[in-house]
Length: 257
Ligand SMILES: C[S@@+](CC[C@H](N)C(=O)[O-])C[C@H]1O[C@@H](n2cnc3c(N)ncnc32)[C@H](O)[C@@H]1O
Image (cartoon, rainbow, N blue to C red):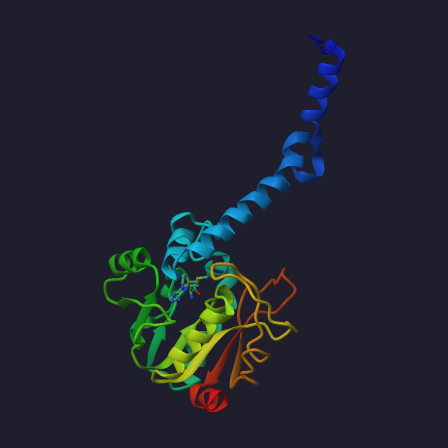
């Protein structure tokens, strides 16, 4: 059997503990080379999981594993304080302008940012597909009402406003179609959802993944919103401005029938 010369061993050792100062921490060459592969493997496993699970299963797993990785909120970075700053500042005035008294907040997620607003002024119902989220919200916010609802198929309680912030961006086109059919069969005056007006093409994704959507373009073709409200962080690093678009449900229903 051939034995490696100690000199070679020392070279191999120094390569594997090579420092990459630009990465801000010491990392071996092996870790550097293998991380794209482990990321690829993780993505493939995730794809299989999303394909093989129900909508509830997908989002329960995302919640249980804190997949969206925010320290502040299990509902993701978009739900932390810096990334909700603009909307928190303007939402109360928007609701006044629209004469909104009742709100179905679907999905409400973990209520991280919206619970800082004075919700007692409205008839507010928070709802989400993940039962654990709703159980925890009921404990944390006993004065508010919460329901387990799937926007794609549950009977939705009537309200002046259905607010669906950061929801459709996580659903595949087929689930979005089901959601819109269900929303338009329900009783709302306004529908508010996340939209990115600078996006020029809407791409398909598996339910559970994320991409930016422009709701004014195909295949949704909502047209210009009744109101476009700035959302996201004051310091926007992603480059594409995130908005909460507000549409009159009667206008959307006319487009869809
Ligand atoms: C990114 S979070 C946004 C939560 C909240 N709107 C906010 O701004 O913090 C997305 C939420 O959508 C929920 N969700 C996903 N699909 C759903 C569906 N079909 N019906 C109801 N909720 C759903 C998830 O469980 C998750 O809590």
